[in-house]
Image (cartoon, rainbow, N blue to C red; front, side):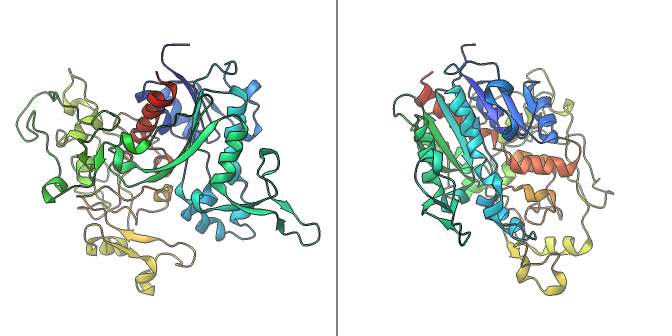
Length: 448
């Protein structure tokens, strides 16, 4: 093993968690996912150590990485739990003969724990949606062997004790010999230009030291109007002529230091995307797709996103995944009516203007506010962009804009297929949030 702590990524998706762990100086040596588009995206960005398989059909000792138990430093992953999320509940509840209780994906965390049980890593990180905290399950006992629901032979109804799902999960983690707990965080507090609440279960095999993730926050609510305004690069001046980008001595994004009180104001939508060229649904002027930058990075965050090499000009870089989807005139008209940060629930719009059944999809139109972090980017963006309307252009966000709001840098490759790319971006763990959690775990749990 290298000097860097080793890690594997289960349910790796497009690789947002892996990217964050790599930024936190982990050696992510193996990953697995069953989605072919996700695996291709992961492979293009991180290498060939990713496996395309359904984890439920794998044996860690046979199909997993060639690593002996108790050698691996970290098992990380985000098992999909759609029935724990609000969007997931609405979608599953609309399908005939299927309910959230019948969706076996909500116990995929057990496959995560199978890998923890086999490899016995020094620590683990498991990410999930906040809806998990509100769920309960009927269990017969609190033991890992019998924590699935049991059913009455006469009525077919579950019997036993109704227990909060987080308690069940923690009990199973502790039964494997780990000290574990969970914490809910907002990605905006760690420099992601998006309010995105997520739950992290963190466990350690030895000792009882777990990180307090609140101590690693780097950003905060702005204190005044000036702090809500897009931050403009000062060196070199964003609007001063310069043939080549030079770099500030102060980092464009702050490092993670425990207990740092010098927090920066939230990174906003404007900070993240307003340097990108305009595009339009009509495909005339502006064009439907832009493949070249027309401005240098304006804000420090944009400078970080561009990832410009010291000997490279900003306009030498290709611009990828910045194409506009088609919108009908009704949608465009509604988009123009909305003010910044304003949302209309579909049910609040007159019947003739509603694009969906409001009893199935509790959808909304929402224009993003340029002076605040974005609302949570969801995989639903692959269906339409009504919840993710550009703050100044009458259209929904492009894949590249959504990726930036998730803290993916512009060099990160996503498929040309917008449907796949939107889904992968919406499902991903924001790399900068993963960096924060990985860094805190490495410093406080692994102590390396």
